[in-house]
Image 1 (cartoon, one colour):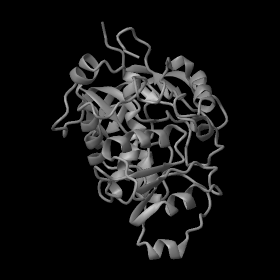
Image 2 (spheres, rainbow, N blue to C red; image 1 turned 45 degrees about the vertical axis):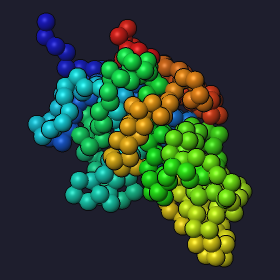
Image 3 (cartoon, rainbow, N blue to C red; image 1 turned 90 degrees about the vertical axis):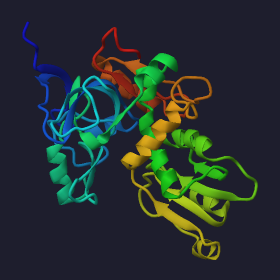
Amino acid sequence: MVASHNQRALVLEARGQPLSLADVPIPDVCPGSAIVKVLVTNIGPLTRRILTGQIPVPLEPPVVPCAQTIGRIHELGPDSTSLDVGQFVFVDLFTRSRDNPDDAILQDYVGGSAASMKLMDAWKDGTFAQYARMPLENIAPLNEELLVTQMGYPFADLSLLGPAAIAMGGFCEVNVHAGDSVIVAPATGLYGGSCVQVALRKATGSVRGADVFVYWSPLASGKSTHFQAGLGALRPFGRCALLGGAEGNIEIPYLHVMWNSICLQGRYMFDRKHTLQLIQLLESGQLKLGSGDGSGVKVRAFKIEEVEEAMDAAERELRWGDQLYSLVKPAMSSIRC
């Protein structure tokens, strides 16, 4: 039997149109890349708004959208030195230019400069498919025997490594250590809730004023009081990490920040080293993900044909503890969802 070189993929043909399930070629591997067999990929609360153009990003249809993914190595480029075909992996969509790391993209979605748009052209189609070509540096190995066989993690639960990795990047940026007291606000959605989970593994509470305030602002939080309250709760020499996506400007209590020597630090996404540190926490059992005891989140999985239902659920179930952002592709009996 001749092996098929086609796959099923969800394609956005034009803004305003629903995703269509189509047969498309499996991407060819090239130097610096791997072909990943997609097991589960995340559906976030803003996915539909991004794809329809309600949130303006430089998305250029036709395109196969991309998200953070749990998968398996299908084929490797000739310059891969540590990964193996068949290996169980976590895949991120945040990509930096190899010759200028200042240029970065969220694959398919966010560029920000002419150079970043060039990078988007090189990594156009993503993980809303059975197979995806991804940069080698975006792929981190997972211990399948430990996580799946021994700890019993379903693939869909492990997909929550994505939001947790963003939190890890912010914590490392402001040097959160064991014993630090951390405030996370707001903390009612997927990303703020994930931030709390990671904070509980990297720090412990105290009563002497907070060491770190993580401001995880959603789009509509520009006029909320979280920012002022969080800064006011910091001890002298405290640190504030700005991780969210609030539109517009926020007011800073200048004298309070100056008198108390408070550090304000923005952080966009994370680096590979943060991903590897997070995986160490997970594989050691210190960090719990998904629908297990004490995790604080529910996870459900959908088939690739059910993407509209998955996006509906992601928009509807916004509170921490109610979320599902996993889309199973393809629907196979061997996939643990």
